Length: 144
Image 1 (tube, rainbow, N blue to C red):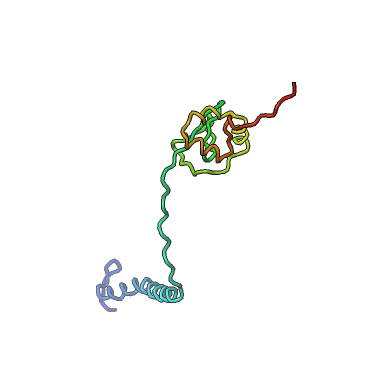
Image 2 (image 1 turned 90 degrees about the horizontal axis):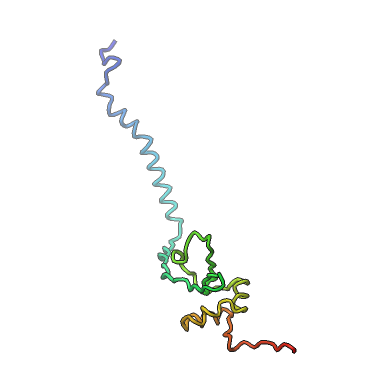
């Protein structure tokens, strides 16, 4: 028998071979993936990157209060007593179509006082949403 290391001793002469065997799998995998990536890059068309999204400026709600109805005239956001988020925490998306019950409230005159007491821009917004000024409304005559 040849003299050599014992069962618990490392053979120093075999270290380079064991290191090559240890790195063989990772080197092979790296070489294969590089080849595949080069093939994919050659086939893939060049795509321009999308521009970063632009954040819209914060727009506050146009709140009108009347007859226990608190709502935004621009987007129709209805504020209730059980609302978890107030209007100051939610961005107004802008002028949208109002819901039917809000249009009925505007037509019946529920929100006339806060609209008339408000700014001219509030009145212009209410007019675009279907509100009529009380002076221009024509009421049918009732027979006596």
